[in-house]
Image 1 (cartoon, rainbow, N blue to C red):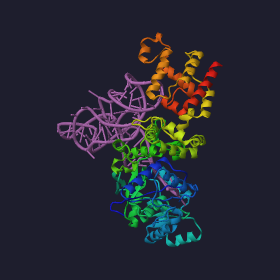
Image 2: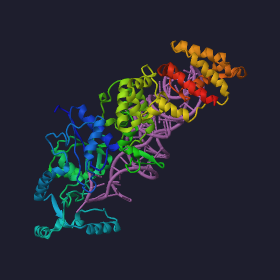
Image 3: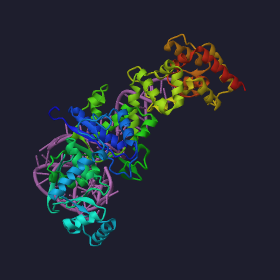
Image 4: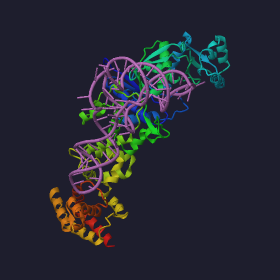
Length: 522
RNA sequence: GGCCCGUUGGAGAAACGGUUAACUCAUCGCCCUCUCAAGGCGACAUUCACGGGUUCGAAUCCCGUACGGGUCACCA
């Protein structure tokens, strides 16, 4: 590996699907590795069989892939430092444990949950530091004979680390994001191997990240409090210390209080939510990048067309406290990304989304893909494109009227003509327009033609004229255009009307007007 | 409660002791406009949680207080 190359990893536990916060952490970890031509790998932390959900490892990998965060090494694509699943690394942990036992760095503990509870209760009553340490660590004092006997009797046991720490001493942590932080030394005899022979997180982290050559341990700040344990473990095992990077956690405002995004309470805590809604991948990633390094936004303004992965992240530009999750900003960024996509890519992405999440959308796209492209391309291919869509699921509700079957349902649910106008007046206008839409002209000519028609019917062609002298007119050109829109599209709002009419074509315009007219006639 | 971390506008934030406290989103106004979506222009922190101190000078350094967050398992 090149000089300065960083090795990072993503180490999820298989307890469900990809968490939005995990995507953030893995995205940033991935970028740090790639920026330095290093390695990013994934290790499944499945040491808690109670919580394990089968198959979620693959699911997570799949979703990371969708976001372009692809591990160089993982269970399905192993490198030379595997296995990449903790439950398959048992022998490694056991070998290290054996050595620790021999060196007196660890010892078996036979205390039951009840005994542990009693200790905790006593500590609480006497306002002592809770935990298993020093005089409370009674299994420390077991003789070899006692240990052998208990094991022979089949008593269940765990292996604890024998801490040499002193709470009056300080240890120093250098965190790449937060700088130097001092903690009191660890004094807890933490469990390193559970009674099921599987390691705890603390132990697995130290052993795995050492043997798997992680240079930068990237994780959420909820791990900071256990750093003294890890520091002591690294020292006891004489392993080189990696660089720690404790990321801020994404928060959410709940009842005026900040709290971590919670999988139970917040739908947006799962990336599935954004996938189902059809947020563009690049928009979502871009949002996460702004959370990672806020100068990303300035870079984006300078480099509007660059790939987001051309941006170089830095540790010291990272915020220290958890950002509030801002859906408005995601919407805005996504809108922007979608607007600047060309019609082919947009259509491709929309179809891919639709095939998985929206049968109806897939149908209209597949029915005539060029027709679909022409619709979504209205006012797209220009300096300042329209920004209609913030996610793929918005498409149907915006283009529906361009499809006859959806137009029909809009039509059936009622046409919202301005009630100021008499039905027969509307009929006259529509019928006249049917025979003289001016579609052979260019946009300017078409508009001039419409103006003329409106003027003949005593609509003001300039809003100002109408304001000045409302009695002289029946309405404004806007009102006139609205009549045509409702009459032809069954909607008050559409993108550029000229383009719409061109795409619809003379025949369908006539059909639709006829339909509307017969409805108005009763 | 102990131990850590943090606190700049509604949100994300810049500024790393020295002019009017960047920028993005949101909000509000005006303009443009066939509707909508945009776009253009402008407004929005006399002030950086609060109180002291250091300094010619502090959002920036120090101390204290308050508030918010994290963590104290045979869960990760």
